[in-house]
Amino acid sequence: MASDKIRIKDVAELAGVSVGTVDRVLHGRPNVSEASRKKVEKALSEMNYTPNMYASALAHNKTYHFVCIIPKHESEAYWEEIEEGAMKACEHRRDFNVNVKMMYYRRFRPETFDEVTSECLKLNPDGVIIVPSKLDVTRKFTDKLHATNIPFVMLDSYMPDLRPLAFYGQDSFCSGYFAARMLMLLAKDEKEIMMMKQMKNGLIASKQQENRETGFRHYMHDHFPDIVISEVNLPLDAGRDSYAEILEDFFAAHPDVHHCVTFCSKAHIVGEFLLKSNRRNVQIMGYDMVEKNALCLRQGAISFLIAQHGYMQGYSCVETLFEAIVLKKEVNPVNYMPIEILTKENVDFYRRTQL
Image: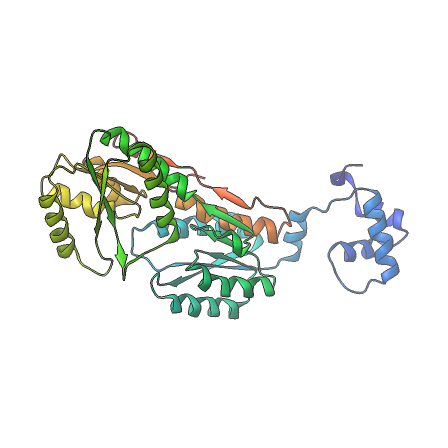
């Protein structure tokens, strides 16, 4: 008999108990003898009964509290898309009383990650979404989550050793490899390209950006080993006047550079400089469909953008916790986002809130 056709009355008759006893067993309620519980469980097994988890979750009327821990960010940033996607998932599951609290840490200050995660643990959430800090710093937190049986989903940077319930983000190495391949369609005859980085104290903001660079250099080593890759650092703690001075000095010293790449979401810093200084024969390739990048793409200062679908990532992380915790479903452990390339010609067709 199909489980959706089985009535509680049928289970009660086979088990030789009351309907109320079956209901208490199904919903984990007290006041059921061990003998009666075993009878009900035996009957359920014989009838191949699968509970309707949607109905069960609605009947419990429980509130589910998730916490999403991400880097503190500016407005118009990639992270805003993630927040919006997470909130949309909560709205979609509002009948189940799902909510998400956003918490923020500073990328280059590991102690802020410790502080935020300590606050998170005090809340005793049902599930957590994490954009990780350094591996050793993040491990201290995830070990505590495992010890308290709080499931967590990793976002943006994948650290499989930490054993998350699931991961959402791009395959960073493949993304960087793909970026090099696309750039070389334009720059195959060049002798030198520029790689723009944003660093602080000699460090890049995320493992994800490091992996993109590794993939990029891997492709270049294999296919264009003679092209020089010149690095330019625009310090994260510097201002736009400093950036303009650094870029002016670079392009004055490297007049034959016509193509650039960056693995962060700030390609528009270079793009805006190129437009302002009227260097129409130079372009940069970058990441993330933020508005300032899109504007530079339309004006020709950015050649390509690779979209990460932040909205989809935020939505999917909440949905995965919901399915695993509320509906008791198995979830896919590794979920790579599409590597979508945007150009001047197709940027206006990009659906930012695509799911």
